[in-house]
Structures are given as structure tokens and as C-alpha cells.
Image 1 (cartoon, rainbow, N blue to C red):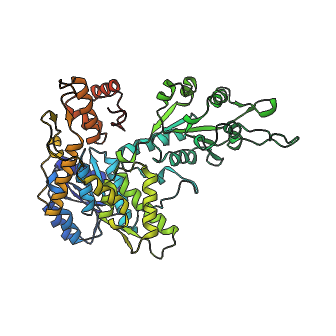
Image 2: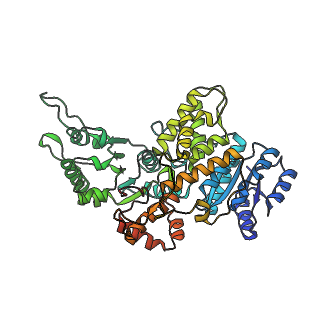
Image 3: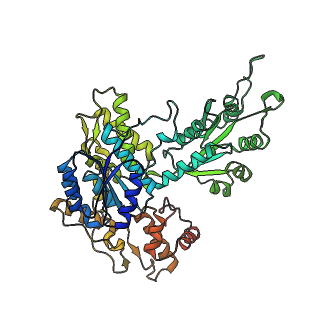
Length: 513
């Protein structure tokens, strides 16, 4: 399908590069070097242009009325905005102003083209062009995984490569990030797709039973009763997905090591071992190296299983995926509820969801959208349909209980605008401005760095350095290049300091004093 795309960018080299790439997709490209020029082009071709790509990296451009003006001309045209690295707040403002998608620079031409194709499909179908399916129903492929962010795109690329081999795959990531879906996609894309995909969650099976569930057992006290096959037997020729592998009891770890090493399963009752043909995909939400150090996981088994690790980032670290996931969930749950007409979700709700950190990751977002669809009273989901998320936002903005002035020995981090070097946005209405002032005060109160200890002595430099690194990781949401740049150190130095201080980049407050 040939579509007309409007590209607005003040960089001539970037405009030429984007024009060539988008024309390579078979589309027609209209170019503009400023917001006003873009609006003029759009007015002339509003009935032809089906998507807009606009570089809004400069902080003052989000709030200058450009998106509103574009919406006034054509409310339904999808607008993809580009923002600079670390500018999550501006991306959320763009979503609230009606943007369809946002890209964090620098991003690849392939990612930009993928966003444009999604926007074209959305414009023509009123949806993302593909259903959002539950991972537990039907075959799931890599095309069913939302990978708008670069972090998820890398994970999907590794998964595609892994699908064409038989080596064990270790999926690492917090609970709810989508490890199950990745495992199913690997199986579906592999040569074993016609064979069984069998799962077992080690945390959900009592330790006394898990050996029999995995490897099979003879029913106790029933002479002549047939042997009950285990998960390895069920998965013969296919894929066995073992979730929460860190919860496997020590004696079962030893038996699994033997299975992986010899390719045989010892059958109950002293029968001859049976050869197996099973591809292993494993998952963990814990740091297995730490489990090995603590003596809870066998080191030899770790190195046998951790052949091809794939890390799936937490949702808070790939916010570009949230709008796509939310739209897909709304579409899917509308169909499941047999609604006469599928619900839609407005810009304010998308911005609200994108701004939330989602400690429960995709699973929490899915359940939140499901609740909203079931309880919806109108055809469009708005912020009012997500009261729990809105309440959490208000709670985050509330001033801290401990008021009063600051101690003169406290070092207070700069505001976001001062730290990032960005120009503050244009003045907001009184109500919005008040919210911003409250948020800033709360942020400052929550992140002060004390320069003296309880005895009144100056604290050690290493202690203050550790606190500042933790603050920067939290402030820039784990964007390592941004953290290193703002701290004025190299990435290799930053990673060394993280290791020295035992800091987890995904959870900088973990073990914090």
C-alpha cells in the first residue's frame, strides 16, 4: 500500500536520509524544515497524508501548540514524534497532546520505518493491524511481541536467532515482562513448532513433588499401575519451558545436570535410562550468579544452562512499548467482551499509562486495561477509567509529610531542567504550574544528600559518590549513557563503580543505606 508521509525535521541531512528510507518502503514523502512549514504542507495535502513524523527534540516544541494545530486540521492522523534521550517527560507530554507514538533519539532507520508502517496500518484499519493475543492461547510468533523500544527489539532479534538452534536459552527479567511469550515465540519459529510446547513453573510445584513432575514417577502403593510420564517425556521432540529455574531444589538440580550432560532421563524403578530429544528454554527473575554465590544454585548447572542468555527489560525501561501494548490490549479485550464496537483509548489515558512505572510490568498493565474495558461506560477510555493509576500519580505529586526548611549541610540535586540542560517548558496554567511546583519540592525532599554524619563530621567521598550514582540511575531511569554523561564519567568507569558499590542498575535503591 502506497501512503503519503509528512516528515518534519530541521536537519537537512536527516530529512534526506528519512526520505530515502521511507520511499524505499514504497511511500510518497513530503518534507518540511519547520513546524509552520509542516502545517502549510499538511493543509495542502491533508486528504492524502496518512502519517506524520516530527522531530520535537527541542524542549520548547512540545508545548508550542504544533500538535494541537495538527489535530485541529485532522484529528485522526497518527503523529510520530522524536524526542531526545532521557526526555521521558516530554514524550509523555507529546502523548497527552495526541501523539500516536514516540521515538527516543538516537534510533535506527529500521525502528523509524517500523513506526511509520504501524501508523499507516492504524490509519487504514483503525488498529495496529494485528490482534493482541494471550500467550496462553494459540501459536505466538515474534510478530505478536510488541518491540517498539530498542531494548525489546534487541531481545526479539536474539530470540529469532536462538529459534534456529537447539542450545538452551536462558530468559532473564522481572516477573511479568513477557518471558513466557518470548519462549513460545522461540518454539513457534523453530523446526520443533509442530511438536509439543510444555511448561513447568518450579515455584508453583511443591519441592517434594517436582522431581516426579519433571522426570516421571510410579504411583506409590499401586502394584502394576502404569508409570506416570514427566514433563520431559511430554515434551519429546519439542520444547520444555522451565520457569523460575532458581527455585529448583538442590537434589533435582543434580538430576537435571545429569539429564543435560548425558541427554538421558533415568526412569523410576531402576529401569534403563531413556534418551530424550527436548529443547530447553529456561526463565528466571533472580540473578543466578548471586544464587550461585549464595550456594542456592549449582555452579556447574548454571554454566550448562546459561549458554544463550536473553535479558528482557522491565517495562519502566522501555516506555515506548506502552502505547502499543495498551492499544493492543484494548482491542483484544473489546473482542473478548463481545462489544458491538471496539473501544478506543484517548491521548490523556495513553499519557497517564506511559508515565507510570508499572512495577508488575506487562502483566500489571494488561490487568489494568482489562479492568478498564470491563467497567467502561463509554466508547472511549480516558483517564477516569484508570482511577488507581491516576490516584498513584496524585500520591507521587503530594508533598512529603516532613515539611520545614532544609539543613544547611544538605546537598540538594538540581531540578530536572538544570540537570539535563534543557530549557524549561512554556508557562503553564495556574493549576498545572502548582502541580509542577509540588512535584519539584517532593523530588528535592526525597533526594537530598547529607554531607555530614551523625557525629557532625564530613562523610567519606565514596559514600556520597555512591548516593549520587544511585540518584542519577533513578533520575534517568537506568539510561546508562545518559547517567555516565551527566556524571562526567565514561560508561566503563560507571559500570566499574556499579560493581564496586554493588548497585543494581534496574533497582538503584536496592540495599541502599
